[in-house]
Image 1 (cartoon, helix red, strand yellow):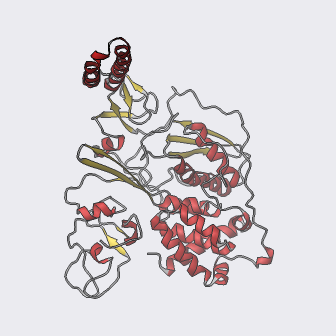
Image 2 (cartoon, one colour; image 1 turned 90 degrees about the vertical axis):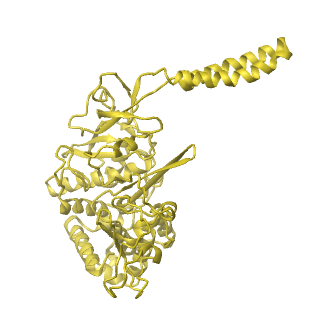
Image 3 (cartoon, rainbow, N blue to C red; image 1 turned 135 degrees about the vertical axis):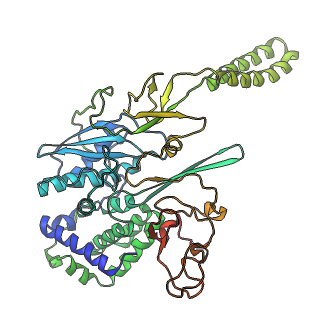
Length: 487
């Protein structure tokens, strides 16, 4: 958990930004919420929509004079677990460019772009590009490369300085899940995604410090809590209470002047951005420098189309027989459904053109790369498989943005599967065994999740839990999708 020294360091780094770039913006500019309150522009899940969000964030950062260009994919992935992948490519005093490698759900777009707009702001103010890639992830062209954590933390702190703190806290740890039932088998898929270089508790602390310093009211605090994930609400609320208990000390730590000198907050609803006539490049043009995103062939058959056509013919035949010869209705009532079922199975053997698992563009039989999104074709999806299922079979693919997809686990304890307990770093689900020991009493090993993170021998409470699978130490609360801990 976030200790006193860590808190002091975060406040000191924010105070340095306030001194370097001025404290008035931090005090007066709106703290953005992902809603119509601060994003009033119409959104479409394509390049134009993502670019609109980027323009809005630049306007909030005081860079509305910059022209914005975006290149990349042309449509969103319909997979509910799809990711928005975007990087800043170039920026100068006239224009800023973004490369968009994937478009996920609309609510994720401002969370991703907040860091890239902060990167652009930092470059213009500091005079040097900071970092090549936005998250704690390998570079696209070098699987062994690692980004500079200090640089990425500076970018995330800049985002908080600009008023994007709520977006940073929301993206610091994102949990998504989807499921389907096939016969008697229930299949659940999930991903954990960590955007930016700040841990969730660090991002929540900076957001709480911003809120308390500005005297944000309880109604707004409650509204922000609703935007945060269940595991971020609790620490954010606790940080707000603790900082409110000694607000003058907080203001001193941040180096802020007397409140009489503060400008009035500006939080008027922005007006929609004007249309500047921008249009995307020809979708057939490849995105220069695009990563070799793995994609899969999705075999399309004609089963459903033939079944629906046969059913429609049976429906027409039913009314024709009803009018001409009522005594023959029995065979059409029985034969129509049977014919539709037969047509479906026949149609499954009639294959149509394959499609890409990411952008759903048609794929030629001999294609090695998708012409729509530029992804490298790495195989074919089986029936009922998703794009994520295909990625889980690839052992050489590194993740982007700290996203971890959980694979099947035979030894997972049913009660933890049902409760949604899993390692926030690798997705390992507890197996119910005694993997944890207490260094205070050195008693027998125990299952920490069966005792709410507390040693059953001496009542020592452990705020952090080591994963036996990936050996990553994470906050106990992050293992849970809800506040009810202990199964």
